[in-house]
Length: 262
Image 1 (cartoon, one colour):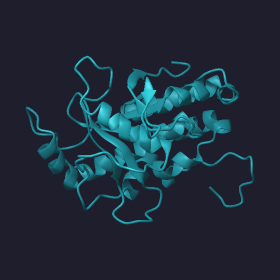
Image 2 (cartoon, one colour; image 1 turned 120 degrees about the horizontal axis):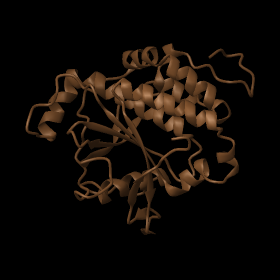
Image 3 (tube, one colour; image 1 turned 60 degrees about the horizontal axis):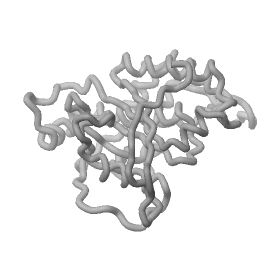
């Protein structure tokens, strides 16, 4: 993207910048064109993301033994509550993970690494492989495409780290009937948000009415491109039956969110 772009113009989706940069350039007004452009250059964008992705020197999975105190924002409350309530969902649960291992997985080795932050939650799939869970707060202004692209960037980072260090850690923490695969060919992505978020983006709201049918179709094409490259995605709606003393949700429920046009 050039520095002389005027206000109101579409951000350029340059594959060489990688998904970790492009996630912030997705605009509600131009989602159809931007998602289509990214789908067209997805292999190159994934390669650029992998080249830029950090590999941690410290473990990825930090055992959580107690709840955090004094959480700064509502999204952190949701992360905390989702982890503790659905850490080990019952066999009949619709939760798209076998278990949750940890949350707030810091990717950079040092502060200030450009555009790399924290995986909201890290889970184990039904196939005993990593699941990246990207969670948005009820009133988040980030659109569903941004949520997906951010989760995909984190999935690429885990794939890069797999053979260098992450596979050994995974084998120790997630025992199975067979050793983990040599290559992380598949990393599932879960894009989760409370009902309030989905009402704002897919309901009868002014914001939702500005997201066109062509935008949803282009997002579906992008999802298919990610799936064919080893990053299948699922969008989920989180409900809750109450709140705790800190304002966090209790009685969390999970169901698949079927986006418009699918």
